[in-house]
Image 1 (cartoon, rainbow, N blue to C red):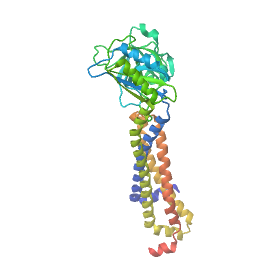
Image 2: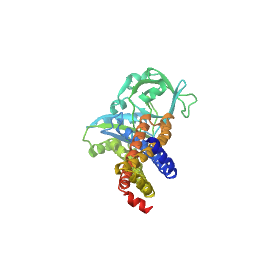
Image 3: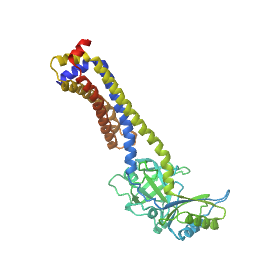
Image 4: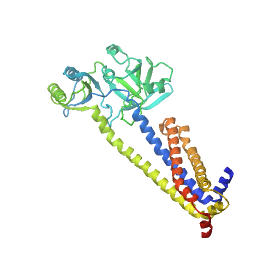
Length: 399
């Protein structure tokens, strides 16, 4: 029976190739769209790795031509920490979570290299303020003041890339590969390893990260500074105004801005949702067009095969048998088209393309396969019913 179906398909190879190519390209496009959607969805449900709720970003900028000494910043930290409703304060770099700014560097250990690592400056309060979960070692503390080289806490994905899955990282040394203004690579000593973090946004994947400890008694003056403030739940504009007034009384010429990290997250989310909505519309548009194309081709196919249907009915074929014949032909063509598309799609996980997890590609292939088969079955059902209802006398008389 299967050989008979293949013979029928081969005898109508021009129309069969049209259907086969449409199914193939539809599968490939659906696979691409599904991969993107699954990848974004997988990132969205993953934990951030830190707690940004009730955390504010406090940005200070000195007046034009002025700078803020570290002693002044320390005084600001103490005064803000003492305000009612403030739970903790941390001095950090400008690249706080969910902003459109980053600070990247390349790191290496031996022959192992890792590029485009997110690097953050952090003090001793940073890790506890964010609730970063330690896997190994500890966060920075006052005992590190006597350290002879810069100290760092790294994320789990950085640890795996530089130290492997089994080798302990705490106490080990790694270096910055490309640090501008340095004749020799800067070396760091690991004091702790934390969980992977997603600081770029809701749909972003976890990125390798390194936190460098601020020099404990740094005398460098700064034109600007960024602080993180964890506040008690329910705090709002009144506390923000008290912060601004307190800082203004200490720094005089400095300007101060206070933003909630949750608002930064929403601001980052809005431009990200636009391309996702466009992808969704493309997927719906594609499915509708594939369905209409398949339905039209099948309808035309049946109108061209009325004589064949009439002869089969005259020879004793039943209506359900005719209907099953058209469904089976379409399912075989669909299987061939999907197999050809799957061979193309399988190259992506095999080649580890686009830094997407293999399971995302597998899920996208399964979804594209299911959608194509369902579309084919639905589109073939009505034309096959029409074919089953053709009376042999009418079909032969028309011929």
